[in-house]
Image 1: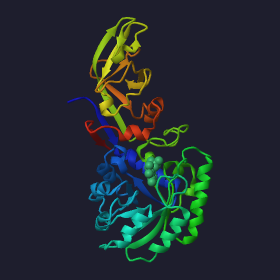
Image 2: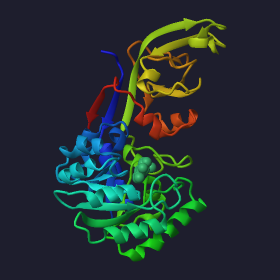
Image 3: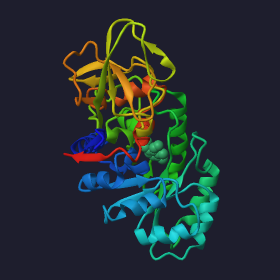
Image 4: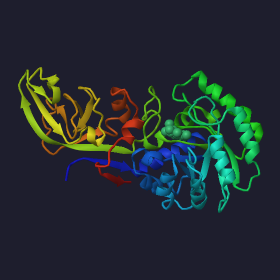
Length: 358
Ligand SMILES: Cc1ncc(COP(=O)(O)O)c(C=O)c1O
């Protein structure tokens, strides 16, 4: 078997969820498990959290279908609502909470003959300008849906654009705009993503929506996951599958871009960009062997990458290589590649087996 595995620590997921809850005492929390739980396996994540989580949030009906059986009694929120009228019928059968982000979705609900009423989350576009009603549009929709037979709870939801940049003026503005609607007496309000859970208590409201922090990565560029008390849930581990000795002047990999400056021992590792390791990782990016950091040499290939083992003479064929995890934070790799931990986690491909521990 190819020696590459993503080990998912379920106890780390629980630790991180409970940390989110401690940040917002007395509030409820939707664990955000969209995109296959940020690559960790939605069903396994839901199963690990179902005893402690107040609810789960997903992007679409298909994702809700996938996890419903794993958490039969839990609230599951469709963050983008329904994409066509028939989805409301299925949402009612599955007992989902649905966001409504525009008048079209509201009309579909008004016309739907549901088996039971739905908890509805009216989405305000408070400044992200991606989804949601204007202040005035939301007031009108609230009046339209209040007391309707298809509606159980009528709630307010919005999403921050810049909560990961502490002190950003748009965040205050978004909070103000949401505040203007609270006179409408919603049953619940939900605003906070991980960044707001961690640093913006005034945004906690009734329900928080932590995503990335559950997986032990940071939403901030300047605050590490470790500083925040988060535990990485995923460790990506490959192995040394070849080792060779290079003379000064010899090169490694496609494009021959990395050239040995000294006699070097080069290891080939069983992980490449077709597994989700970013091809943009530059030479010098760290992986960890025997608890020691060693640098990438040359371009990442589809199934393999190369590292300089010269300073770890005890490294030998078959040794494990941590691409990311507790010793090599995914956020550090992401920064080196000009991206975010979210992207790396969600891009671990289907051919990488997930192994669950904890
Ligand atoms: C509407 C909504 N709420 C919550 C989240 C969770 O955000 P984060 O992963 O930054 O905690 C997301 C994720 O993008 C989202 O789209």
